Length: 260
View 1 (cartoon, rainbow, N blue to C red):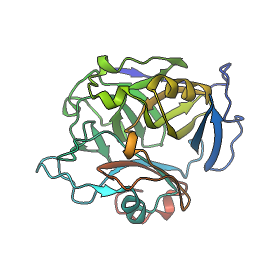
View 2 (view 1 turned 90 degrees about the vertical axis):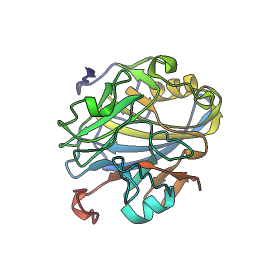
View 3 (view 1 turned 180 degrees about the horizontal axis):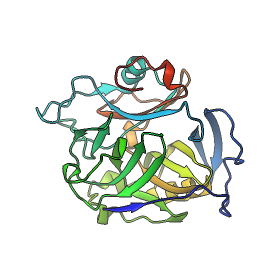
View 4 (view 1 turned 30 degrees about the vertical axis):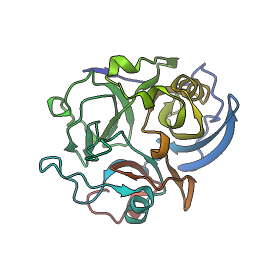
C-alpha cells in the first residue's frame, strides 16, 4: 500500500475557502464555485477536542453478513454529531458497503475498492491508495477510523482522476450526479462538501482543488448525497444508507459508547 503523507505548511496553492487562521472547530460556508452552489463544512483539525469517525448502523456485522441500513436522519438522531456527511458506496440489495470501514480501531467491513480516508488517534487525517486490496489484508492498526471510497479527485494539489484504475465500473459514477466529497487543505482543515446540482466527477475535482484541497476523495453521491451541520440538513436525502462520517466539535460531549 502506498501511503500518501502531507505536511502542514503555508502553501502557495490558491486557497479560496480558508484564511489559514484557526476559527471555530466546526463551521459552515456556502458559496458558488465554478458556477455551482457548494455546501462546505470545515473541520479545524488543529483543535484538540475534535473527534471524527465513520459510523455504521447498530447491529452491523460483516462476519455474519448482516448489513442493516438507516436513513441519514436516523444516524443523526442516534449519534447526535455536530456535523455529518454520507459515507461510502454500498450494494443496493444487501446494503454491504463496497469500501473498507474501520471504527474504533476495529475492522467492521472488509471492502476492496477506492481510496482510504484514515483518521489516527490524534484525529489527523491522511489519504491512502489501497490499490484494490481487500481491507483485511492491510494493517490498519495506526488508525482509529478508516473509510474507503472514491474515486480519488486531488493528490498533492493536482487533479488525479482515473476511476477505472480504482475498480469503479458503475455508470452512475461517471454520469452527471449530485456529489459528496471529503478533502483536506494545507492548513489542516478537513472539508465536507456537497453539490446538489448534477455535475461530472471532473467538475467536482476542480471544485475541491479550487477550495484549496491538497487531497480529496469522492464519496457516494446521487440520492445518497447528504450533509448535516448543527441541527440543519444542508443536503437532505430520505434514502437508506449503511455508513456515514461523523464530526464532533467536543469529544467530551459524545454520549455514544466507544466513540470518545
